[in-house]
Length: 467
Image (cartoon, rainbow, N blue to C red):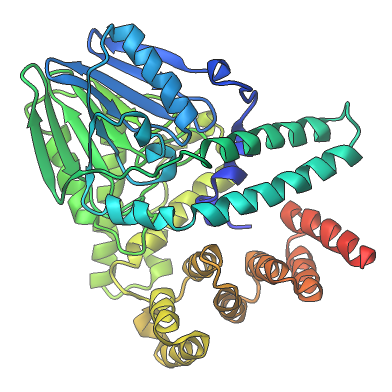
């Protein structure tokens, strides 16, 4: 199962990382880290968000507001107590993702700032709330049914109970009274706000993790907030979330911030560990070296594989092992970056197929694939990218289109266990049990360690027996 394809499904992720889930708002665990007299970082529970609060002469500023309004309310109370003030003037969203912006409504008096793409992207999320809550309620009943059949003293029962508490919290927070509240002040490239004693310098980083990622620099404090671009525990740095990447812009922004006259002291990522400027400088070099190396290889007429051989992951990045990442995961991450960067230099077959399907349907996508295969040297055929396209269709309810793309991936990469796993998941979602079983079994033949396939096969066969 491709790890990337799960990234947007918040519920699937938080079930893995949460340890104790709160029963009431007062029980929500928030760690307060004071960086200076006027800067706090509030480390949130389930997703490990870093919510930053800054006290300026012109009001309080909150950067990112969590996934849960209940968490945002708890955070608001802590900020008021710590600063002994209630004058919230600004909320800034580093990007539009729900885990950073769905608590915005808790600050109704504040001006909300974000990239120009944020409002429309958040509006699209608004359209899915009702269906999302209905799906959660259905899954909640399934979990309650599983709990009734589990040994109450088992680890399985503990996991199910945590899942139930999380879903109940999710449903409560995002049902009656929940309002997606997008930015009402936006910018395209750069914006500076002078607040007398501090300055907020905001930069559009360029299309990367979300397509609307911004950095916030506070020179008076030596602080840079980077959203979800640079994370290295639980996640790996999130450079390649979009098909089209603004890599030269990333490098330009990082040069401006790291090599400018204002010294950086502290980097605040969107989640988990705070960073030093030295670590950010190291990852800036990684991006630049990868990009420049691939450009040179392309100019020399090398294939992607030959180019990738030239650019192994340097030993210094293996510190990621200490942050809980396996060698296989680290190498997968590096390979994914190479593929994503190379795709900016040649046309992506997956993207062209996606465009064809969006224009005229799956049959048109199949025709486009045949055309591209006839000129294979001109295009980049990448398993990961086709998989990502399939999951983008699956996430928007276009199951038949997703199946068509996953079948293309099977045709293109028949020796990959993951392509069969993805196709099986789509068939299962459509209710095609036999085809789902067939493809999970094929995935297991190639990779007997595929636990995802084992789990799904067990459930699918159990359901088949009941019919």
